[in-house]
Image (cartoon, rainbow, N blue to C red):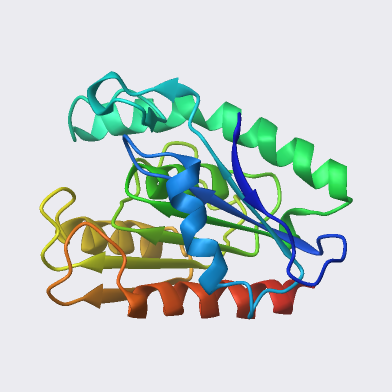
Length: 216
């Protein structure tokens, strides 16, 4: 997968990686715009924002992790599962390239990318440092019901005025994650639509920074 990246501000070899996963119809070039606001807190971090593998015909130059035809639970679960191998392969390559482990990795996603961050991050062989989901949801719990999977900490942030993925998705996802004994933190951004406001951006930065530092 091609995309955008931002090298560590320190100028040194990366000590950790933040993988930024964009939403439906967007691109890595859009998602990498979150990274500059996080660099001061994460000076040794390599930020990677890949384009999803599929072109999104509905959105011109954008990309999609899978063709989003609806929000039926079965369709979301199948779509997220189908897109996961490409992200896992990228993670495997980058961790090996830099001599890092899942403890040095955070997954951050927006909308469909948040679904992918949760899909992949909860199913890696070892726990990642953190997962942050903006304006998204847990697409499914297949394979997570036996309690033996790694349980990385999760932050979910959602706007009350989101017309694309209703804020009810946060509450549903929080409930599902808690039933799975996953440590989940939530923040509701009042009046915010399908986007990330400065407060949500700061909370995500602090959540990732604290947990990557703790894992190192």
